[in-house]
Image (cartoon, rainbow, N blue to C red):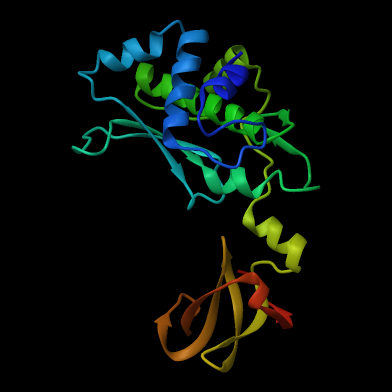
Length: 236
């Protein structure tokens, strides 16, 4: 199985809830799937494209999607034509203690490695469609049929805890809430406009940038633990 072979061969992924991973592990994962599931067909298809290749990357900035597959019609010298990107942020922010159950592509994941495999399989289906048709959509039925036939996926979404949900669970905060915080010794009040690793808080100020509501705001990026709830809530 791919799982056991990755655990045996990776210098970083040594257990189900691994604490380290590198882009080289994603390349190894591709090689394992290509050999075991596709008998080398993916590598052959990529090789026929003048070696324009497939790259792998981990992203700490992807906070909602577990993975993405990119196709660049005109790749640059340091940018491959195809690239699979996996969210290390979502992998490492989940499976920490008694979080809610994690389901990826309709399949229950017991640990971080299970989630990585299901996400990677999803991206492989995108790659197959890009290689064969030049486009890919996981909302379309052909994608769903291919994912179901190859990997047993029953859905095309993940139920990993994203930053918005974690902020509500751990701090009782969500987008639209009015909050206060101290910056450079001054207490400021504003509303949460976005939540990623930190909260983006908009504070009304005449010197700020104009927004679509006709007001001007200064933008602050504030760790959640530094925010206090204020009265009232606005819809984003």
